[in-house]
Image (cartoon, rainbow, N blue to C red; front, side, top):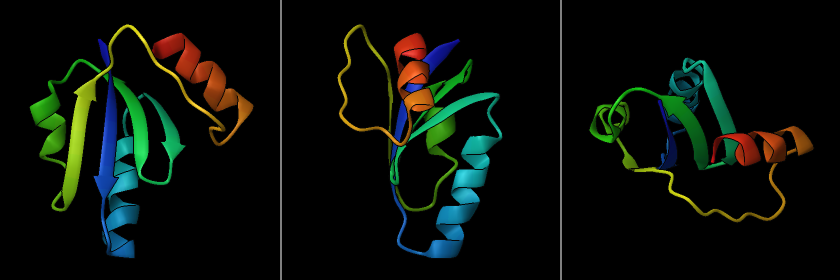
Length: 83
């Protein structure tokens, strides 16, 4: 299993909501901000990139990370654990 950062730019509200529901289908996920989520999966980055019809960037997390003001304290704990 790997943790991926998924950044997306979807202008249409209906498509954006549908895409976020796809991200929520992963057992382990964390919204970082409105256009960037982290997910844990055994899939490859290219498999996840196929989920969107708009602009999207997927990268496997590495060994170092930093952030400021995630949505909630629980999100901070999730990021510490999985990144």
